[in-house]
Length: 244
Image (cartoon, rainbow, N blue to C red; front, side):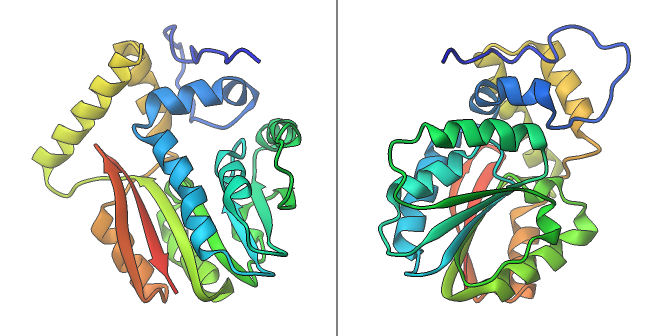
């Protein structure tokens, strides 16, 4: 199927409303994410590799905020442990519906997948060996993030991991400006106009709140994880793995 081009913010908007993962976004999401998030494909590929390494026999792997299921598919294609399954959760009905269609086309249905349309803060996590938060935590209100991290840690088996990918911020204004400008240059190189960049940034500013790597690492430690490792970064986008 031909990938639709993201032009949601191409025309001037009379009124700016908060960004949400509705039908319009779902229709262009694969194009949007590839053109907006540097290193996204590498992160997705390596989520599968990490899951294959740390998945435990007879356990659950969770993809929390799964969107169209890219991380779920990557895990499904890599995991070889017996009696593992994947529980993929998103609160957007449009995402879940489209994700279900894409998963049905997967030619490697060896690992069962359950898709849930739910708030990840309400989902029970238990007997987990791998939990993925791939650009999801940044959409959770900051005051609620520690509680979610603690719940994930409590639901993980010993030896389990949390993979956490986020857009990150910098406490130093010069470093923040440097990385933001590089990200904007990346988007321009991928065909986005200055108007699109500006309007999307305005739509996201109230719903997506990035934090520093240090803030994430401190929260992971406070949430119970024994250690964490920053394994990927490109501009102001990063991915960490935390160990129980």
